[in-house]
Image (cartoon, rainbow, N blue to C red; front, side, top):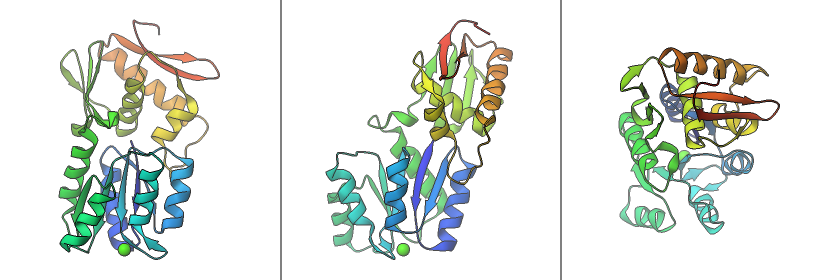
Length: 226
Ligand code: CA
């Protein structure tokens, strides 16, 4: 799940980036409004973590323009300005949640999970298909009710395929979901992840598998088509 982290405080940004990377997220970290706008223009995000005091303006400007353009992706505002008026202002402008610095990273992660569980954001809904169940918040996959071992990348891949089950997922869609700007995704990285996921599903006895649509992408569908 791809997350945009907008934070100009380098130490905080780095620790948030690292913490999110350890969870099942692909964070892109930017340090200015301009970079945030550029990132939003060329990638799809499931969540934005937004600092307000940025070197080239206020995060509230970005929030306002996102909402004005009809973009309803969840936005969690992080700011040192704990004043009641600022908080109300942020929420009025369309923030979904608000965290006052300093905060514990564990708390931030739990707020992120809560935001992504909201029905409005389909990204983090628990998904089930055939005998596969995915619990994104816990990073857990079960086949026939049994938890299976799965690496973070393949968990993300399965999640993306499950969201669009029985529909074609283009390579570009999956690459956007799986890799952030800093992840060097070689030309065969996606194929390698798909192969690993197929092996995991097969050995777990899943009733769904990943079919290749040559030259286009992949479909998660019921039945053993390996
Ligand atoms: Ca700041």
